[in-house]
Structure formats: structure tokens, C-alpha cells
Length: 317
Image (cartoon, rainbow, N blue to C red):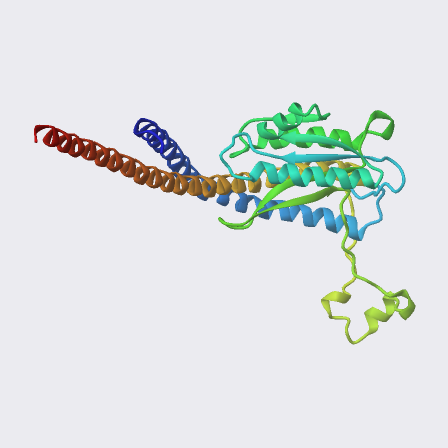
């Protein structure tokens, strides 16, 4: 059985850790509501600009990098992993790194050459310790990212995407981040930002349906049969898309940063709540062990006193 001094030392140290865990939980609890609201408020703008890009890509025939898929050409792809700056968030960063490693392995199997970009001090330290090649890193404020860091990341990724293959340009952009579902569930996702993936309605050419048939049919008022809108661009198609592309990339990255920040805060709150409970349980267990040790010591002392008294009585007799 451990000595009483050692048990008291462990109880004191565990109590101090429990106070730290409880303080971290309270801080995360005070930040989670704001982080969640900021992430939700940024979503409408991101959805609107994404719908605009989807509409342009789906209803026009434009040869632009935003919607051009490189088949059998440039094999380089950019992968951005959004990790945390601080620990005490449970498996938050490790889950992102595990998903990133899986994505890199799949890209290698497909004959791609992934270039890794990392945001967050924990992820940067992980790859730096393992001497992994990283094309770009960013650190600071992972739990409340600002527009500045989103602009910096989007500029670096967009520059890499717009470069030709001969200048180490990339043909695809991926982001690995944690999506905030609710306070209990946070899901790691892999998002391909560029080129834009189109979701076109399936049309069977064997049916012989023409546009005139649709316009003259009884189902002409059906929204599914609406004619795709026509777009006119001022001053030109390239200039319009060149203006939309940076905003599209920055808004998507900023939304991912914000939802990742909400997920990090929620993960930290849950982890610190669990750590606080574990610390309290350990303190209770150590306290019972200390009481048992103290009672055993008292019992031994009483036994020794009684034994000594009996021995003295026998000597007197």
C-alpha cells in the first residue's frame, strides 16, 4: 500500500489538474455559443456564392480553370488540413491528421502528387517532427479565425491552382476539416473545392426529347423542365470569373475555418468535462485509499500498544 505522504501528494496534484480542467471547460462553454453563431451566420453568404458559381458552371460553356477538370494532365493536387493551435481538445487534431493521411494515401494510389498545406500549430508540429514536406503553414487563432488568415490561405492556394504545370501548379484543391453538427457530434470531412463539381440532371438521349418537345409538352410548367437561363457577362467572361474565383475560394475556406473553430471548441468542452469527471473520480479513489491506509496505521499502532501492555503485565506477574 502506498504511503500516506505519496497519496496526499497525488490527491493535491490531481485536485490542481481538476481545477485546470474545470476552468478550461468553463472557458470553452462561454465561447461555444459565439463560435457556433459565427459559423452559422457565415453559411448563407458562402452558399449564395457557391450557388452562383454552380449556376455559371452548369449553364454556360466556358473554358476556365474554375470548372476545368484536368484529365491525365497535371498530377499535382493541394491538400489543406485544418488542425488546432492548442491541445486539450480530445481526439480533434488526431482525427484530422488520420483523415489527411488517408486522403494522401488514396491520392498516391491514384497516381497523384499531393502537396500538403497545414493550418494549426498542432498539425504543423506533427509534420515537422516527422520531417514531412509541407508546402505552406499557418498558425494562430484556430479557435476564432479571422478574415485575414482566410485571405492569406486562399491567396496561397489560388496562386498554386492558377500556376501552369511547369511552375509546380496544382490541378485540384482539397480541404480536410471538422464539420460542426451539434455539441456532441463533430464530423471530419474532405471537401474538394476546385475544380467545381457539377450536378447536372440526368437526360437520356435515347428518348429523342428535344427542347421544342419540352416547350410544347403538357409538362412545360414543371420546374424540372425549365430552360436553362442565359447569361451575359460584363465586361467579359474571363474578368467576371477571375473576380468571382478569389471570393469563392476565400468564402469557402473562411466557412471551413469557422465551422472547424466551433468544432474545436465543442471538442475541448467535451474533453475537459470528461477530464474533470475523471479527476474527481480519481480523487475519490485516492481519498478512500488514504483513509484505508490511515485506518490501517491506527489499527497497527493500537495493536502494538496492546501487545506491549500485555507483555509488561506478563513480566510483572
